[in-house]
Length: 76
Image 1: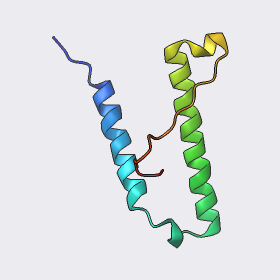
Image 2: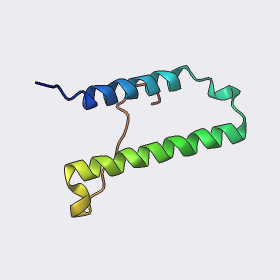
Image 3: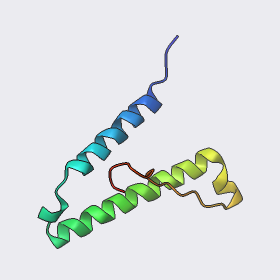
Image 4: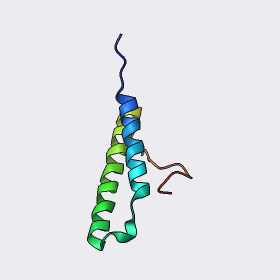
């Protein structure tokens, strides 16, 4: 019997991203680099929110799904 590891793989990927962002020295970024990082993170957040809405059925109901980082996690 094969085991679906997609959820584990995604979880591992998200931890890698969170740790990389926590290690980043944003004060060393130029204004343009900072704006590009912000745009990339905003795009990623919106993509995750859309996918979450599709999977929970909220998109059909027109409800908004908000994806946020729990308090105490890197980035809060």
